[in-house]
Length: 299
Ligand code: CO
Image 1 (cartoon, protein in one colour):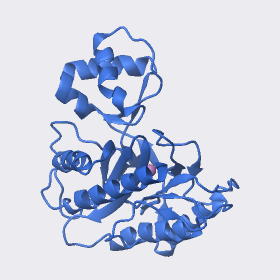
Image 2 (cartoon, protein in one colour):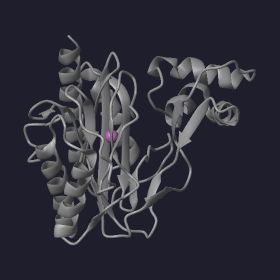
Image 3 (tube, helix red, strand yellow):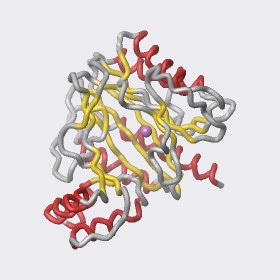
Image 4 (cartoon, helix red, strand yellow):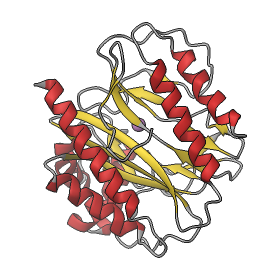
């Protein structure tokens, strides 16, 4: 039954990722695409873990606010990262498209695909994590790029996005071995920049760290609104649409100050490099059971 839920989550996540990516065309509104993706997750019988994106040097964690005016331009390199779950069993997957027909970033897109593909081939019980990292960086370097060193894949748990073990994107000497049955997400980020990201700009993605009492009515309201996420991410736009901007801002500030909620700001490549990313979720078996692969995926 657990397996059925995981596979179902994968079906929904991969379908929505594909549909969302197909909407990344010149003039498309980022907000509208992300709203569409959330709606589709529910229509397909899934539950929303997150729908996020990143444009050009933003690797991830861009989640438009309710009035965000961002539209896509010719040549934008856009990542879509869709997370869905079934009763907490998570499917996490991502892909990159270049908007329009320039095809200037074909190789960098290919490099991230190659990195993911090569790494999946190595997944088996007993495989050491550094080997998965080495596979990613060497595929990136083969086409003249580098991986983003301070971003990594991760184990997945029930209602847990990051299960505590990181899957590196370079040889970090980590000799931890993959275990049969682990649920993992592998997500190489590839760049023509220095290969480091940092948080920059206004955060719109949040997670509840630990629930504890709060005095502010706004903070209480927010905790009520996001309780159903059970620790999975939420975005400020969900809140502003329900309780208004003022209440959202005040409540979030209070929750952050009390370390109840943590913000996750946009992740930006430090040297301004463009970033591409591909990601699949899988179960570690003799041969990786990739459960976010769409029929149209060639990786
Ligand atoms: Co992930």
